[in-house]
Amino acid sequence: GAVVSQHPSRVICKSGTSVKIECRSLDFQATTMFWYRQFPKQSLMLMATSNEGSKATYEQGVEKDKFLINHASLTLSTLTVTSAHPEDSSFYICSAPTWEGKDGYTFGSGTRLTVV
Amino acid sequence: DQQVKQNSPSLSVQEGRISILNCDYTNSMFDYFLWYKKYPAEGPTFLISISSIKDKNEDGRFTVFLNKSAKHLSLHIVPSQPGDSAVYFCAASLTTDSWGKFQFGAGTQVVVTP
Image (cartoon, rainbow over all chains, first blue to last red):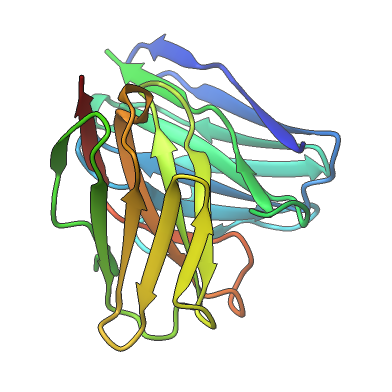
């Protein structure tokens, strides 16, 4: 079945540095990728929608200059957390519609970001 | 604004018994619903879905019920097994808006005891 490979699974970075998270679609083309964030004991919250070849659409309250999304190809979408701060520590996960199978979309395995 | 709510943060059930997880939503336009299971440090795993044109969908031990008038759905797991211990999320989507874009509940931690 369709798989989204997400890397890294865990990352620890210092405050002020930038971190890039990659999501690659394997065996299918992801024209759209959804990026979610989950804080402890809270639900997954949609941050932004990336579309191949165009600008990402950000949800209300999400800083587009802080969370840079690039979707330059049909198989790769990246989320870069710029100038990370401890409050950015969270679980980030991507999801892509696969247009096949009973669920039609698949999630990456997630990235646990810790900013120290 | 939390449009999908799971009011029970945790549920403990004995192995072999039924687990019932509940989910409420506020947007009557939602037309597609899912239940996901999530283990720590892993991505969500799809369990079962239901379209708003149905009121029940069954897949093995998992059954999802949808009550559109009450804006409520539930997941039944029968019989519960220790491997079912995980966090369960319900999610809702407005498919005419954007396929694959979901609003998630906060999750219910299920613990199945032997």
